[in-house]
Image 1 (tube, helix red, strand yellow):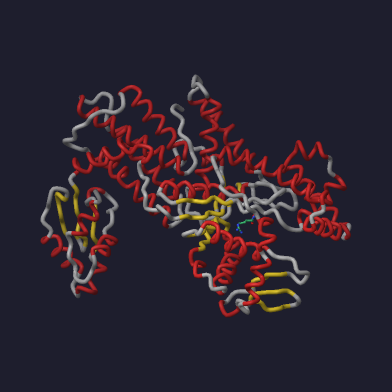
Image 2 (cartoon, rainbow, N blue to C red):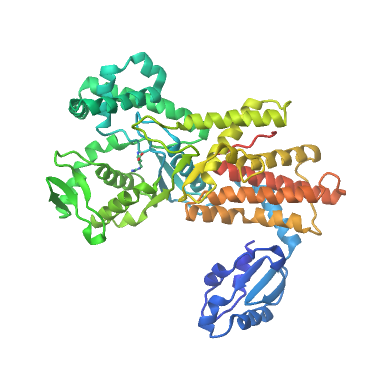
Length: 560
Ligand code: ARG
């Protein structure tokens, strides 16, 4: 039952449609004011009346019914109160019957959404800077799936470019098979860093690197084999991290996948008179759109990052016929995406409007940033391991006799890393702090997980699956109910705005409301009927918290 819809359907206000009124109806900041409110300020112009008057008129014409028990006009707002027992019963029934599907829907049925995220670079460190794209993209993937869409997770691997020539040159000069085999990404990065150091002294190294890259392109067996080996080592290393973070992909088609798909794109650009020559290079002039030109081919004929992305977008449209294609990539690449979207639009691809750059801010650690070239880099795996270790210390101190401590610490530590990256609006730059993400009393995943463990322990003692009859609902209980009922809307909103942080904040809010209820109202010592009701409220909370964290890729230990 959508009470907002029910209210909207019963209000007449000038020319406004039911849908417009529905959109105006909001939830007041405190429950004392009401459960829903219609602000009348936006109506004043079309109705040519003061908001206060409009509110009074709407209120006096709105007779209470079986759902709406109270209507009042206050300072230009119409406040509505919903029958609490009814609302409560309905919400609990829904959560307890839908369980791990609670919050899901079919609204995305038949719609495919490509999501390009994580998109790591071969032989480059997987550092803390890759955290956001990985966990944001993964959360968007899970969210789309939960709401009935068909998501396609794409890891657009950075597996093309002169850096592989550099790496081959460095490996052949200074590398040892066993060292690289054992050291993986870190050993490869060390070689890459050494190359840059040595090339500063000896320019000719760069020519050698270029020659090796050319060999890869020409299919030279040895160079290609080395390149494939670097790729394999990288994927093995990042695979471990993806597994820890519960991140999955349906496609690993990276930049090199598009090598043979670019010529037709360049041809099409030429046919459509979009290519211009500039200093020997082929560009698409975007001056008319206030942007620098989009480089398509370098003067030596080599393709560029943008060329491969244009080919990739066309390939994705042809392959998946997507409803939307999201690119979860840092805001540093804003211009790049604006350019390629514009080029595709100019090529006459009407679906260019369905390409969306989901931009996010930077993550740095408290002690500063990192640079791949100089070798000063914070590996994501180290951050995760440190968080797991710290979780283990905290858990051991809090609950020394807990079984399975290592397993639980892993769930808590990994959760802290994910949640730390997802708690703020994605566009904000964040400074990652171990203290902050592992604060059990803060706005953190461990706070939510701890609340789940608390709920679990109550249910263990009191029992699950209670049949309830609801007569009266106290304010603390009702706050939890309202929050529970809000879950499907929050998910829809999070998907629409590409903001998994809405789900993260929702989980913290629900946990806080539940804890208030838990401390203010006795559950296990209440008289039977109240006790059963409170137990089912606890169960519904646990289910919903699990669903919320699950969508972010975070698990919930039974005990903590
Ligand atoms: N590998 C790129 C980087 O690390 C990100 C790729 C994003 N996806 C894309 N289709 N351009 O900067």
